[in-house]
Image (cartoon, rainbow, N blue to C red; front, side, top):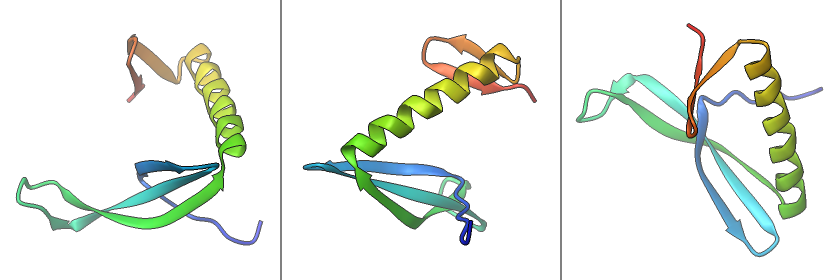
Length: 85
């Protein structure tokens, strides 16, 4: 592996035809917005074919299920999964 990219999360996903654009975000803790929260900066964009996006989603869902089974994550309701901190 030659290049690693860190992101605090995904800010947006756009689908245009057969391409999916995933905007990665980084928090800027030294810069606070009007609400006092860190400012979000769109740092990188990943572009992949729709087929690759769907395949990556299946892999992510499998990892989440493994983490739930191991007790690393806790499912608190149908739409919310939290880390065990």
